Image (cartoon, rainbow, N blue to C red; front, side, top):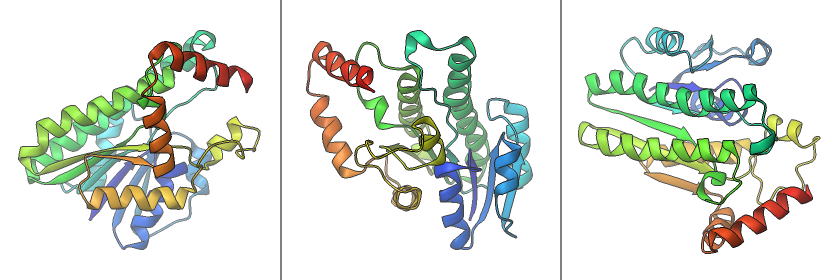
Length: 247
């Protein structure tokens, strides 16, 4: 198979890429950090592109160069996150999250859609977050942008299901990535139900193989979010904002 992973030069995207390479598939990845790209081990079936996914022209050119008209799976794994709360975000932080998390994901869907419709088959997956499942006042720009990702998955699934193209919304809890450690002074011990990148990658690949509409994991986090979702928004806001302020 030919698999392209946007944001596949680090974190969960790179973990998924490595798993697919181990299975013998051709993999294309893209990212904007030259430092991260230089750190990736070379592989005969791996092609790496440096670009910003919200730049559709360069993104599309890379996917076309890699796929040569044949693309089995597109995974939109790139994401931007800031620790700042909604009211404290700088303009650059807010705009970057919107460009990467929303515009970049939309570009991935559109680029993959064009190729896959011609072939009458394919699968698109996009990485969201359990943070997107909780609606409350004061929710971060990140969580709201990731809610848009879930909505995009639902819309494209409905539009493409009759044409042999599957769409999976991937909604993970905390994953032990370098980025998460950087944001938490290398201490992720207080993150509930945290997973390794390898564990999360296995779940993502399996959910695509099974053509799942949506996968929320790990199971304990899914249960916790389900319980929290039962609270009235006002009470949920008080609980979550108090927890944020304690950090």
